[in-house]
Image 1 (tube, one colour):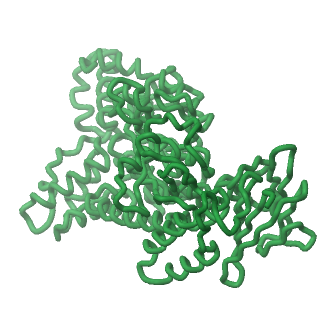
Image 2: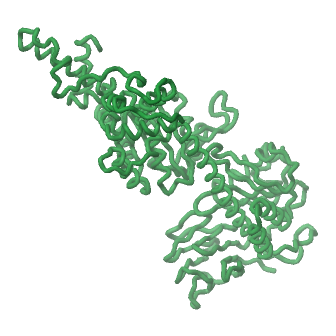
Image 3: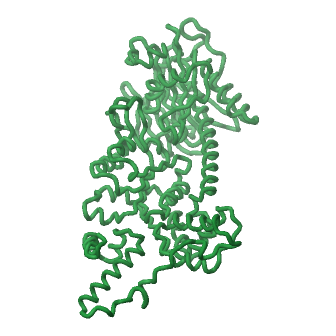
Length: 613
C-alpha cells in the first residue's frame, strides 16, 4: 500500500472516544465543524479549527480562529509539522503522520504478527479501569503494556519528572520489565529522552546501526537496537515520557504504529498529570501544616479583614498583583516576612500548581551563584561529575524567588538580565540554550533605588524586575498588627495563657528591629518560660521603651541646656537625633539615611564624628 500523509483525529462524543483516520491527499485540507470543511469534527468550537497545507516537501498547520496547540505549545501563525506531532484544541486532538509512516497492515515487519490491540479498545478499557478504586496506577501499567505490545518493543518505561526537588531528573512510574535496573534508565534518558523532551515531539530510531547516536556511550551500554520516545504533554507542561526500545538485533519498533502510540501516549499524559496534581496537593498540604506548626507562615494567617491594618492593605495588594504575569520586587527590612509574601503571590497565582523555588543570593558565594541559578553540564568544571539543573530550570512552570537580589555581583547581573530578556539560559559548559518559564519575584532589604543611582545595581535589570512593587512596612510602623500577631504566636506555642494589658502596651512601644521574626521569638519565649498564669510585661524580657523623638521632653533633651553656644547645641541635637533615628531604624543605615533625607555617605560621616562610624 502506498504511504500517504495522514491525520488521526480523536474526540469525545456522547461519552465515547471516537477516532477517524484521514489521508491528506489535497494541497490544503481544512479541519472544522462545518460540512464545507474537508474533515468535519464534533466540537464546541465553531468554524475552522485549522488547515493543513502541503508545500513542496513539507507540511504546515495554519490555525483558524480558535486556540490550537502543537505538542503543547500554542500557535498563532503557520507552523511546520513533523511526523507524530500532536495537535490539540479544546475538546479534541489529532496526530499528524507524514508519508514516511506506512499504513498499518495485517502483519508487521520482520515476519512478526501485528498486535490485535486496537487503540480505541485500549482507551475504552483504560477509561473503565479508571472508574474503579485505586485504578489510576493500574491504568498506567495497562497503558504501558498496550504500548509495548502494539509497538513490538521488548521493554517500556513510563517516566515522570520528579518536580521541584528533581528538576530535570526523572523517576520511573511504571516498567514493562520491573527487573530492568534504574542505571540503564538513566543512560537512555541522557540521549533519547533528553532529545524528545527538549524538542517536545516523539523521537523514533528504527535502527541504531549507522545512526548518529550509535557511538553514544549510554546507547552502547544499554545495548539498544531500536527505540521510540513520546513526551507526555498536557496543556503546555511536559509531565513525563514513554520510552520504548528493543535490544535484539533486527527487531525494530514498528513504524506503522507510531500514530496509535502517540494517541495512547496522550492518554498516559493525562493520567500522569492527574497523578502529579494529587502529589502536589499532598505536598502542599504537608507544607502548610508545617508552616502552621513552625509559625513561619504567620504573616498572613490571622484575620486581616480590619481596614485600619497595614497587613490588610498588604493582603489586598498581594491579591491584586498575584494573578498577573508581572515580575515583582518586594521591599522590606530583615525579618519582615518577604519570603512569606512571595509564597502568597505564588499560591494566589495561576502558577500555584508549579514549584516555588527560593534562592538567597546573599548566602551563596559569588563564584557559585551562576551555576546555582543556571545549572551546569558534566565536565563544565573540576568536580562536575554529572549535569545539574539550575534554579531557573527547577522553577519551570512555577515561581523563582530571588531573595536579597541586591547582593548579586555586577558581572552576573548582566547574565541575569539577558536570561530574563531572552527567556532562555545557557548552563555552564553547554552551548545549547534552554528555554525558561518561571515568574520572577525578587526581594531586598536594601534601598534598591539608591543602589541604582549609585551604579551598584543595573538600571535595566531593575526595570526588568520591577513589574510591580510590594512594600512591607516594618512592624514598628504597623502597631495595629502587633496584638493579633502576638495572639497568633501564643496560639502556635500551644500554651493556654493570656497576654496582660501591660505586656501588650510594652509590645506596642518596642521598636522591633527584628520585625515579625523578633516578635515571634519574644512571645514564644514568654509563653514557654513565664511562670505565671498569664504573660506579664516582665515575662517579655524587653528593655524599657526608648522615648519617642516627637514631643519628648525627657531623655532626648537631657543635658541640652549645658551647652552655651548655639553651634554646640545644634551639634548635640543633630547627634542625638541621628542616634535616635538609627535606633528606630533597627540599625539599618540605608533606611535611616532615607528617612533623614541625606545620603548614606553623609550619614557615615556624621556617625564617624559621633565615634560610631
